[in-house]
Length: 290
Image (cartoon, rainbow, N blue to C red; front, side, top):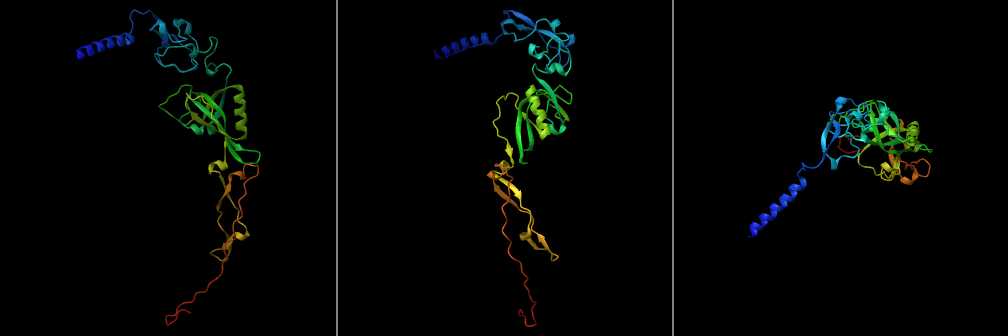
């Protein structure tokens, strides 16, 4: 009896699950517009690039279209892949023209930076990726520092290419970034005072980074490495009999030395031990030392 009861319970559960996951062929359907092929951002839609498929009317994607004729000549803002529904968020405004300008979000601007700045993400700077922008420069006291100045900046194009190919990473000479006007001002100022680098970030990570920047002291665990120049007290006899300086030796300076606005100074080194001349005579015939 227990076996029969267990089988009946399992049968009922299977029927309920099947009703939940099985498609309801009697449910009302609609046709929505999807991409017939991969479509590159910045291009105008042609009739052969779109088609329609049947979709459950109660599960239509938000912003989907039912009439493909309404999308002809509309500009695609982002890459769309074959069989992917075309949504309003994929398209620029109806009056937009093909090209980069159609890809820029309302209220944003596009600005390009050169090869030296792209080296931080060499081979992985692709359209649609997000990066942070760092500047490396010197402060008012001529001390070097590095700081993140812009976060979560979207790459619009790589060397005028707007289509990403994840299977072909390559070193590029320029990228075009999308940012707000105030961010563009900060970027333009940053590259005029120092060197820029891009840092690749996860596309779903929108959390701001909490950093105070980095200085020389931070590279060595709270100490700065400086070199003391040789002075008269650091001279030693050379192979030719002339006095030569000791090699410069690195010395550790407390981290606070460079933070107060004064360049770190190396502590004076101790005077080396005095050097003299010692005479050693050879052995005599008697085997003794003289």
